[in-house]
Length: 402
Image (cartoon, rainbow, N blue to C red; front, side, top):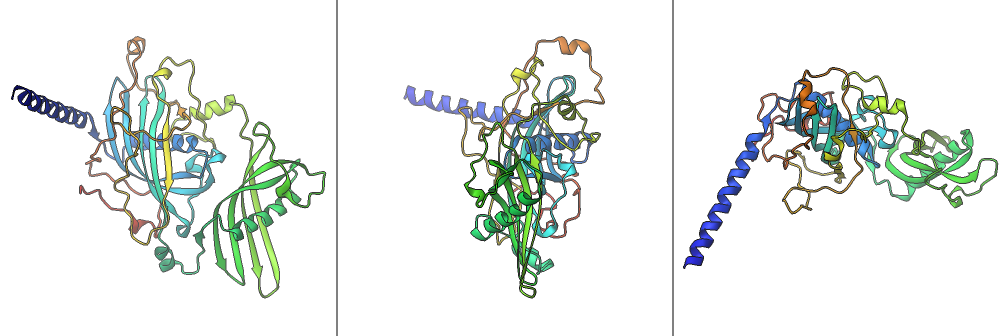
């Protein structure tokens, strides 16, 4: 009997502690408006670092801020818990271009979704660090495209042989006309679509890699050329098309490529780009350089995140809730797959702080589990950054608690 009483008492105490702990965590968050300068800058920095962290896919562009929760901490610092509506762009992430400098895709080619992100911003110490992120994306349902543009090409499976063939054909044109020292081969097709005009037309986007075969030699089959080592090889991103004319019995091939040298060392110019204040940067690229000399750096955990693309759905999808990661740490916090740290800094307008605050012992930021509740501010979700007639009906006007 005594054991039973102790067990019940212990269970009750544990439940009370858990409830109190959850209540305390909820009280730590402020439902911030989605239309403030602070929210815009936090979203901008988070999206810059999400894109810089990734090695596959396309640069994500901010469509609107869906929710902002703020956890204020030491003077002039806060952790922001963001839910962002995003669309992908025409820029590959390897280009390192800022999302603001990348064109959104045409309405019929939109891939959209939401990102959850936790970013810590410390104005006094000139730090903005992305703790983790999770993005879930999917193409606009085809029926929405056909209702507005029945003749528009619809994205298709890029792994189909006909698209690889189109990529190889268009790359042959690039290899013939470019001034590169070596031939390039197709690495993989990243996006593909087909349209019937005066015959079948294939549109492809694909990555290419530099091979060991010199342009001074005549090569019958580029696919037989071995890629250069990762230390030497250049990677490129191409957009090509192969249009077949049934009337003229001809084939029209187009190609445009960008070549990236991924092994370039960090330059002073690149570091300055990372320090641009949101909204004031005139640079076209983004970089992420953790500061080894900053005493705060050891307290910033490695950025972890993932981007998942779902297949096109036949139903309307509202990304009001993002699924939690299935992997959890012992403390119950979700853990996302490991990724490369991506830290950028703030510069420009400074927050007035007592200098003595910077001489206090350094302690790390407090990062809580992502809150269950989203922002209750009347300004959330925020205004869309652009007009997309196809996407707009798919997005909820206001978050409603289920």
